[in-house]
Amino acid sequence: MEAGAVDAGARPAQGPAIRRGGAHLPRAQVAAAAAIGAAYVISRFLFIDRFPYFLDEGTYAVFANRAAHATQDLFYSFTIGREPLMFWLGIPWIKLGVNPLVSVRLVSAMAGLLTLVFVGLLARRLGGAAAGLTAAALCVVLPFFLVHDGIGIIEPMVTLVMAAALYLQVELARRPDLRIAALLGLVLAAGVLTKENTKPALALVPLSLLCFDFNAPDRPQRLKRWLAGIGIAAVMVVAATLLLRASSLYHLYEDARDDPLLYTVRPLGDVLRDPFAEIGKTWASYRPAFGGYVTIPLIGAALAGTILGLRRRPRLTALLLAWILLSLAVSMLFSTLPYPRHVMYVMPAAIALMAYALVEGVRWARTVMAPRAAALVSAVAVAALLTPALLLDARVLAHPDTTRYPGTDDLQYVTGTGGGGVWPAVAGAIRARAKGSQVPILTTRSYSQVLEMLLGPDPRYVFVPGNSPLAPRAQFSLDDEEIPFYDPDAVRVVNDGNFVEIGRYERPRGGAALVLSQRR
Image 1: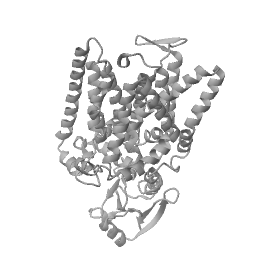
Image 2 (image 1 turned 90 degrees about the horizontal axis):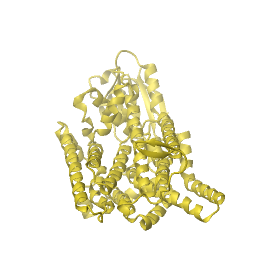
Image 3 (image 1 turned 180 degrees about the horizontal axis):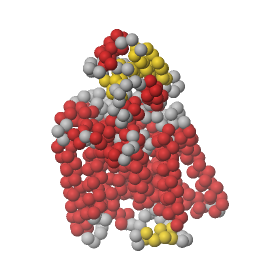
Image 4 (image 1 turned 135 degrees about the horizontal axis):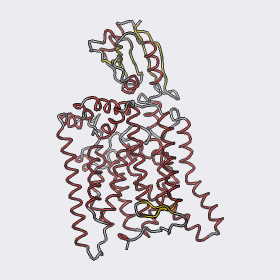
């Protein structure tokens, strides 16, 4: 019976084993898990160390930095309608002396590592230990995760919440236990504090009953424990919501939600009246994400895993498919400013299905071919499936600052005004030329958050608007030429203050240029 059965496709462990918590783990599995973990850490470190900080990271680093230094700023992210958990998690790193820009990247990297664990456990539930290890390895090499686990943005946290919530909902349905329920409640509460697009994890709770054993002799008691567990989780979600509302800055959060430039989500009423109004825009953004970051061969593997799973493990596979389709539908119907990373949270369930297909394909080859032939065919097939992903991985790790990223990410991360390739050189120029104990810097047209964090936490550097009392004494001005709006007061100060251009910094491949000027 599926709900209570041993993992489908699992094979008895062979060879030496080590004992962990009362269970015997084959040494080969332990070695494989260790190698996967090491590959994750090395690949993410290489990316984190060399990818230029882009606009959103600068904004989030500012939030984390302010929260780390003033309790009244713990909810400062409410000013743009963002929930605060990611920035809170950056505080310990900042307290240890880590630059805020690095701290938010470390939060993402840790979220990615935990996502790998939960995806591995989920795939193990679907197809045994081999599927679990394969899924974890896919988390390491999938370009979607390789890139975004190393960037200080919220989406890795969202993906972790979705992966953990899915796995814990399955486990709570299989073996109702209030301890599992408490963990699920903690994860769902973290979702409330992370970002609104974790809500599908709440909506999909009833579907987890697909994994409930309704034929068990103690079914009434099990169902009561499940309901009690869901009640505990619901209380924790409500507590997280009340925590947000308790902030004195919550009115700013609500105001931001009324600003279409900050809150890029369609109201439910609009979606009901015209569900497909934004579907063309969202699909145009997400299609390159699937084709580039996920790759067509691995999408094919996920489809094969779905077909195979519906035949062998229909209830669990149907649940995974529901998590993919509902989450994708929500993102496509509600988003007004889509970026490829906004569908990253559908990947945990999809990766489990990919891994299931790969493992079952290898097992099939072993049953119909001689051992050497099966090994050769399996190696060639897996290599063919992974080659497009590995090629992008190689380009990203070799040249993360200039490589071409799928879809609109290329503009946002590299060539556009949000791209961070120019900021280290600009920071170096300012440090070399700055004079005095206070250095006011005007931003006539510029997103300066990354530069602020690169120059910080040195209080010597002060970024000011044109109407600031410090503006007449500004030593430098920043002008990102392709930004369509500007500070007229700052422009007036520059025009009246005898500034001269000292550097022009162009982003890769003919991208947006930034001009740094200094007062004579």
